[in-house]
Amino acid sequence: MKEYVIEKEELFKWCSIPVDQLENHPDSKVKLTIKDTRQEAMRLAGNMMADEVIKNNAAGKPTSWVLPSGPADQFDTFIDRVNKERISLKNLTIFHMDYVLDYNSRVYPLGNYYESAHGRMLYRFYNKIDPELNVPESQRIWPRIEDLDEMDRMIEAIGGVDTVWAGVGYKGLVAFCESPHDSYQRITLEDYENMKTRIVELNYDTTIATSQRSFGGCYDRAPFQAVTIGFKSMLSAKRCVAMICTGEWKQTVLRVLMFSEPTLEYPVTLFPKHVPEVIILADRFTATHPMSKGEIVLSAENTEKH
Image 1 (spheres, helix red, strand yellow):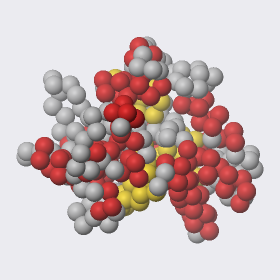
Image 2 (spheres, rainbow, N blue to C red):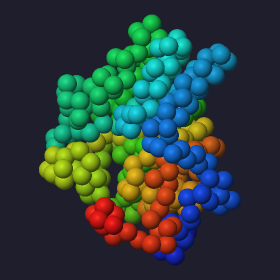
Image 3 (spheres, rainbow, N blue to C red):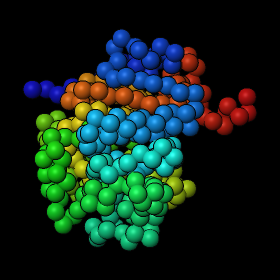
Image 4 (cartoon, one colour):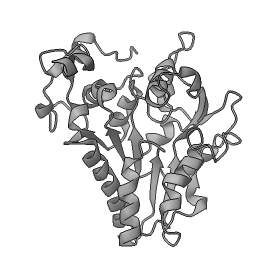
C-alpha cells in the first residue's frame, strides 16, 4: 500500500490560510487554541496540567503523563499552583520522554544541566515542589539504556498514559522520534507506529536547530545521540497536548499537524490517527504563517529597515 506524501500544492494551501481562520477550521484534525503571546499559551498549558491532576485526584484516579524536559515555561505555572493550592502529586506517574547521550552512548552526569535531562528536571521541576506534595521518586520514570523495554512495559501495564505533553520539532519530531532519513532503510508507517524506546543518532536538522538555539550555530557542541521513548507508547495516550510556540521554526509544522494525513515526513501527524484528543497550544506569531500574508518578507533584517 502506497503511503501518503504531502504534495507541494497542499502544503502551500495550508500555509496560506489566514491566522484568523485557523481556530475551528472545518478541515482541521486537531483542536487549536491561539493565545496572543507565548507566555499566555504556556500558562494555559501549566493550568491544564494542574487541572488534570485535580480532576483525577477528586475522582480517586491516578494520573500518568509522558513529559518532556523542554519546553519548560509551563512548569512555573504548574508548580506555583501545586504549592499554593496544595495539590498532591502522590498519584502522578511521569514517564520522561528522552535525554541526550554522549558520543560513547553514555549518560551525562546530573550536574550537567544542559546535557542531563535528569539534572535539569531536578533543578527546574522536582526540587521546586513541596516535598509533602511531590511525585514519589519511584514514579519518576526515565528510559534506561540498561533496560530499554522497561518504560514500554510499564506504560502497557497501565493501559496507556493520560496525556502526552509534547514539544514539536521543526520537522515534526516528538521526543527524539525524528523523520527517518536513512535511504538504505525502508521504514514504514506501521514500523514507526510500533517503535519502542530506543537509542538514536540525531538528524542533521535537529543538530542545526539545537546549535542555532543554544550554541550560536556551533554544531560541534550539539548532542549527537539520545535515548527516546517510541511512538508505540506515546500513541497509547488518551490525549496529546502539543505546545508549539517557537516562532518561525514552527509556523509550517503547526499547519501540517492540523491538516495532514499521517506521514513519516512529519511524525507528529501520527497522533490524530490514534489519540482521541489532540490539542495545539500556540501563540499568535507562531500561528501566523508568512505565506498567509500575501507578501513574503525576505528576512528579519528587511523588516527592521522598512
